[in-house]
Structure formats: C-alpha cells, structure tokens
Length: 90
Image (tube, rainbow, N blue to C red; front, side, top):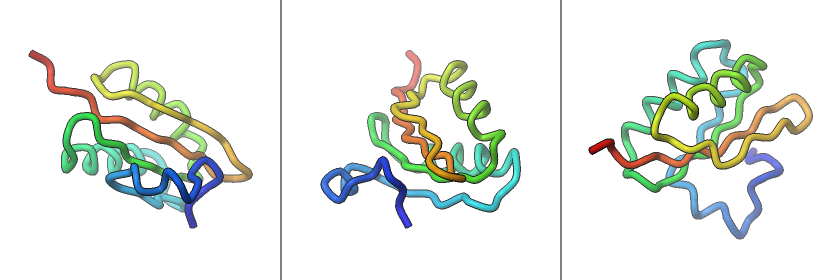
C-alpha cells in the first residue's frame, strides 16, 4: 500500500515505487540506488521502509550525491521518501 504522502492525483508522477518494508540496513539504500540507475535524470522514485537507519542513510545519500531528497516523512512505523535523480556531473 502506498503511504500517506502519495495521493491518487500525484501517484503517476513516480517512475518507480519501492516497497522496502521489512528490509534491514543497508538493503533499503542499496535497492534504492539500483533503482536510480534504471531511471532518467529528473525522474522520481517513491520508497517506503521500516528500517529506522533509512532516515539517516537517505538524507546522507542526498547530501553526498547529485540526487535530491524531495520529501522524507515518518508515518506510523514507516519511513517514506521521494528521491529525484540528479543530472550527471559535467
């Protein structure tokens, strides 16, 4: 089930939606990184995890890469992220 930050109106804007609930660190980050490789710059991925380490991992990933963490929310026992793939460096 898609989380609270994803309404019916904006569901189509995501290129990929990843349900990574139940996976332990570092698997959510690794699977999200693999998904990013499959999409074009500017496209969005929606991710749900239950691993509390994902909160730090996804924020740090966005800081050190050319990708944008568009939203990050904790809803009940899930962490929800929207990541925008950055353009390749020149």
